[in-house]
Length: 389
Image: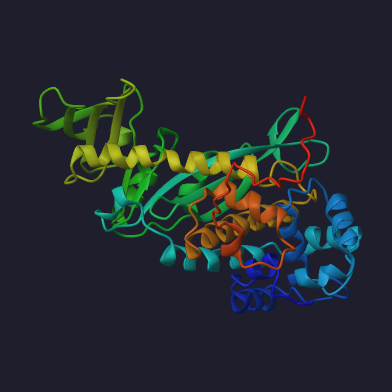
């Protein structure tokens, strides 16, 4: 008896099918396809992420064990390991990248905005990267160290809604500054970075685009103070200066005014020196923006702990990028599911519950409804007590 759609079918319904079909046509996803379509490949990989499968062999074995119930996952037939492996190796990863970007565009409109940042009425992004270690023999193209391979996921993270907006994958030895050359700064937006991104030429290009940056100043930075602004005595802000770069090369690369703020964290006592091109915001707001940067670190930690991105189902650069973009798709799916159904659970709890109930024909709201379970049991008077002495 058919009682409704499975949980997996309800999740897949959130995927923008039109954007996916356009991406498939744009990058030739249907070229020379005999058995496994792009959608079947995507569904298999999403299933592997939700159920925490560790390899292609394990994923295919679980799908085969489902038998006819694969139909309720949207799969039209059985999946062979070699077919799925070839699809991951050869099918253009940009199909899944464009799908993820379409989902991110929708998610940024419907996900709630951080309360602390809402008053800025501006886009706030964090820019950072995370390194994923790989085996050098299996991934010789991912240069990192002499006896070690790795890739870097350079990520632009929307601090307002808590989802990544863009990601670029590079070899592990690529410097973080490379990502500043890959993005187009938005006028009026804030970009929060650590001091590894301090490069006056690139920061000045961001300044000319009308964007604002917040970063930490490097130690012993040579500068010339042009104005010392008053700060409240005894507060966490110790100084608020307008400066000009001091060195001849720095003056040539950034020939404009910067703002240097010395701040002491009231909770930890840590001393921080911020560098920004925004000359009007309250210094405490600048410190708040940098504090919010920690959300991208939590994002990296979350996807490494709860999604399958530490080991990969293929060894080619295309397979690695496909799996990383599908992991982003799953992350946005979970965030959208939590928001649309107003679930009180955390993202981790939502992911775990969905992972063990994918084939249940239950509305998603019903999975997370809290039921009051009484600790007392009504015992039948005719029932004997088993352990009564």
